[in-house]
Image: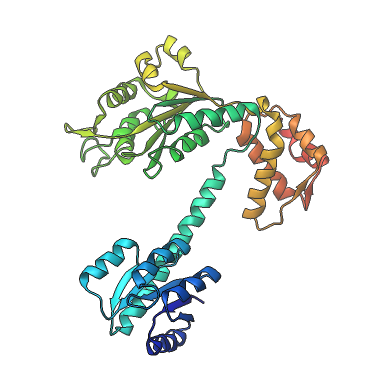
Length: 386
């Protein structure tokens, strides 16, 4: 049941609103002035706040400033003395809406419900963001991973292009996301393209878009990854698998900050930070004539090498605990314990699949073990895989 705070110096208005809102199944608290209202907001949570403008002790507009700092609840301003200028000022300050007295009760109820819907969406967005942040959390305290974090801290605030190297499953995408999240472009899009997963004949369309009719299946105009990432970060994963023709176009886009859609002639300006990753040795690919040397030098302003899991065994306990919590939460189970002996068994493995492989093993253990994980469980459910 939603909680609503009514702040108004007129007792009759407070009583009327209480009666109406309680009839609509809301829980209602009221306050006779801005100071009392602020005191109540400090004491308890409200889903929506109704606040008069002309009040003794503390003006409603002054109270609004404090309410927005103290609470995430939408604030609806109400007044019988306001003007359009006052309404605009209130909205600019951060009020959700402004309703003039005498109150249109139907409009008030609609506004309250819309405010509740917006608050619910904001809560869901925050929850999903926390979930995403938790999923892409960089876990570990080994010297090698601390060095990666330090490098990210130095590089992220700049617009320098970054080449991320490392074996499959080490977390190269995670590094790319951290670079984006700690950059000036964090509010912009993060667009990922896996160059190894897209057929060579389609990679240019995926990157640069295409015009309608430019090829058989091009039934409508399509924006590519460069345009979609405008103002943000474009992450090109497995860049070493990109065709030479696409490499040439990427090089031109990096040089000129412009792209041309497949089948088009118009040049489109783009503002994109490019971060790339590969599990290949690009210098060897250059020797084989399968990767352009000039593109390599454009991309490798900063190089970050992500260590393999076998090179950071001290992080295995932290990573295992992190994955256990993740899978237990997703399956609605209490967090399982894992014995020190079981951790030592995990440290013995080579982990050719790196963190991705460890994650899969922990998920299997959480599913198959009844309440806790022991060394014999590791030998039974994980050892045969190595």
